[in-house]
Image 1 (spheres, rainbow, N blue to C red):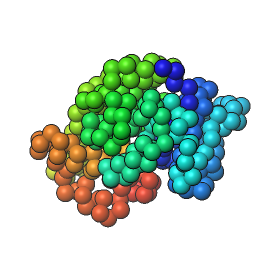
Image 2 (cartoon, helix red, strand yellow; image 1 turned 180 degrees about the vertical axis):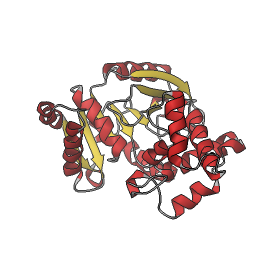
Image 3 (cartoon, rainbow, N blue to C red; image 1 turned 60 degrees about the vertical axis):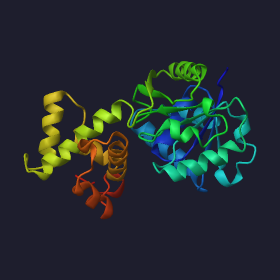
Image 4 (cartoon, helix red, strand yellow; image 1 turned 135 degrees about the horizontal axis):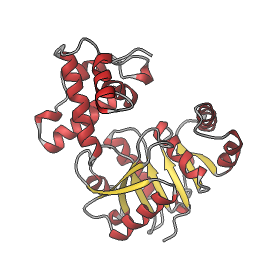
Length: 282
């Protein structure tokens, strides 16, 4: 199967990053969102990427020419032209279910559908589609243009040919596909978020006097580029809390049970960089 036309559903940072990568490799990309200003948001995103040195100014217009933007309310027939559809909406299972049921009405029988979920079961979500054998996980990491890894997640019903097609596609966009089995948090997040949670617990226990001190220990003692608490702010405390809850419920292990501090931060709106306040102020 040739995968040439990609649809990305969800206009958050991950969605924009995935669009960036595919458009920069000359794929035709259909970008679906619910807001009317998606094009302006995307142009602003690309301008920031130019400022950060991740995108050359002369390539920006060529990439925009590869992208068509649609409102989800006007999707009728649009998904039928896609070889691969990647869902990147917020990490809420009911929201994802609605999106998949909407997509399922339009797609061809051979269309591959993927989720960028970081914690929900691929096997469970495959039940939202008529052809679960064509569904799998494509777990990109932020910032998408820079991060090499893509976890290709095989659900219980995912066809082996689909896994192989998507793995080859990931190589075409100059990234590293690693095939993993469907399990809560997959591989990276299962290890990463227990580390983040332990750092939060150590802050609560005053083992170090500040978030900055804990992060400095990880950065300078383990050669990490960013410490676990600043990383939680970048991911979003709300997302961190959701992932830990899903890990706890899926693995039935108390080490993933999110501490009260995280719950309090979410309820008070201190959800990290995107809100201006988390473990750090922005």
